[in-house]
Length: 206
Ligand SMILES: O=C(O)[C@@H](CO)OP(=O)(O)O
Image (cartoon, rainbow, N blue to C red; front, side, top):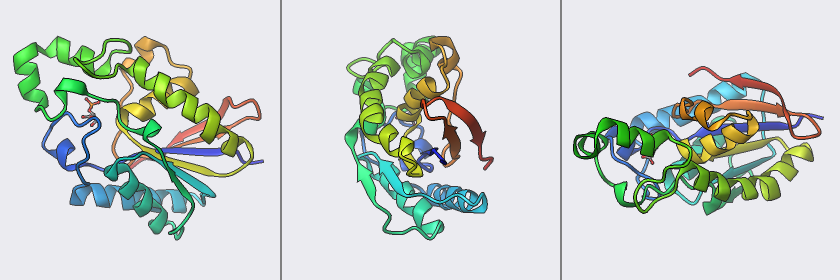
């Protein structure tokens, strides 16, 4: 049985381009983001991959990415489940701030800790640990059972909500996940064993 799980971060958003902390804010994709999403679909189709089911967040940039990927694969209209459990990490008071301005104000090191540490939340927002605590129950209760039933599954979501899943799937330590960056529109293809451990992982190069 093919227990296929593909994670893809949304294409470049308007706020990625403007270098703003985004979190639960809802900017659209840029033209480049649209191109990245389509290219992700083309790459997956080129690998001979198809899907039975898709999951995405409650935010437009991930939903549009999901749609574009599926469209490019000839799978428009595929059953897609939207849930805010897959939303980006909530950046709290940093949402909408320019990342360089934040570095100038709070210092390079502090901003790096807020962005990439496992357990230090940005002011008023979620740490990665908080994000794992939100994403993981949804993954275990909703997504994983589909994958284990043999439904080939796409998850189109966000840099940090997907880092939360990558940490669990790849058994990374808090130090290991700190160094892990996910590129926009770059699919990660996992094949799981019957016990849900990863037996194969491939990054599709964009
Ligand atoms: O702004 C955000 O919501 C995220 C993803 O774009 O940023 P970061 O790279 O700091 O995780």
